[in-house]
Image 1 (cartoon, rainbow, N blue to C red):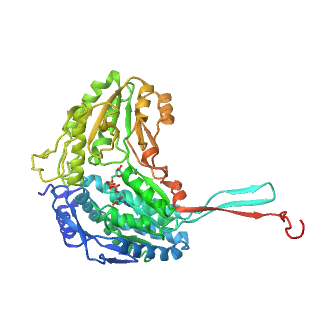
Image 2: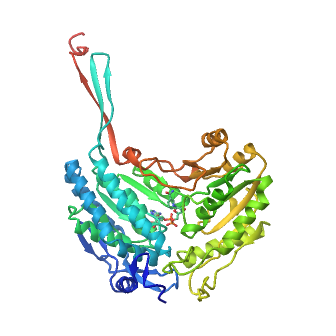
Image 3: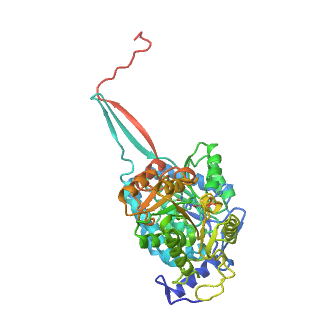
Length: 517
Ligand code: NAD
């Protein structure tokens, strides 16, 4: 169905053309500067979440492809890590420009492949370009660190060097934005890359490889292996020539990757799951809190790592505030991701839909009160048939913090509202989770806001706001949500090795061994 002449500024004919091409051309690996199929010739299908029809196929990589890519990255590292920073910067800026040039194609591909509304994905593509432009500026400063004059006798300085090829393993929810967020600092700081994107949304990674080729990045600096986690992903984690692995994915995957990487003592950056709380106090700007809370859980189809999926509301305003959330949730427009009015699109895959529906059943079984949704959306807000896709009605429960739906990451448009008595009770409930990615606090009491910012167990805390990413600031989680920090100079700790260099400024005393000294 044609929704408009242009969607998110893209002419409808162009959208059709891009969809057609996805079906005609397999998404290939990109190794040592060339697009290649798997040695076995095997491919795997990627489904259109709106209909579950095959959108296109991607090459199914395994040990052999990962080995070739790792060797290419290893060989290229010798040159790229010595390439002057100003030159690396120019490549990054070129890639940023080319992402902008190909923005329509990238946005449509990702919209169709991941099921995210086109207008949302368009912003993600702009952020992908920004990731490169931002880290381009860091390239020339990447190796700066401290000096340590010791009295007047010694000078020590700390020096950073590129740490080696990086294996980047990414999830399906925001494939382009999340992968570029790792690729850009890696390249800026002198590392080479092997990317393994998620098998449920493989297409924009291959388009990015085309862009890298168009930017004339030297062969082997960026490599891509398509495939499944247990095959290509595991082979990458096990490969001896790739000393760094950054994984964005589920906490359970993080555990497996950590175990496998331990065999090789690899450096890991883990960005994992979340069950982030939003605390709403009675004194808050409730209109702002309402907008933020509804947006944070239902936008992006609820498939957002930093979603505030636990809504903790002070008792006195609980029924009223949650009632307003329910009104909004019930009115959210569920529809096709190409429909410019759509607010929630289909979940990525039938398997994921089943999983999310399983949580809804678990919530009911545990006695949570279902206020809105709780079932598949079979017609769109326009009345179109959605029954072939993975659509779910935005869902709101009232529950308790100990329930499965309040403790486990659902990764869909499902919110659990829980009352709290006072600040202490709210904080206790907020921290009573194995996760610690983000937390949100809504109050007009400044002292309380800062007290909670200190006490909340989360890598990122937002006060009176939804999550607005600012690239120089540290991004990451605590507890089961991950360990490292990415963003700005914080990424340096992962992508570079730090060494200390000592130089005496006058002859040092060296004991004369062998001379009785
Ligand atoms: P996932 O863990 O299933 O997969 C992530 C990636 O890991 C995929 O590329 C997959 O192929 C790969 N993988 C799976 N098993 C592997 C193995 N044994 N060895 C190596 N690689 C393997 O996650 P998903 O379902 O694609 O994404 C959703 C999850 O990602 C959610 O938990 C979400 O919170 C998390 N996420 C976290 C962040 C963050 O920054 N913290 C951002 C986005 C998504």
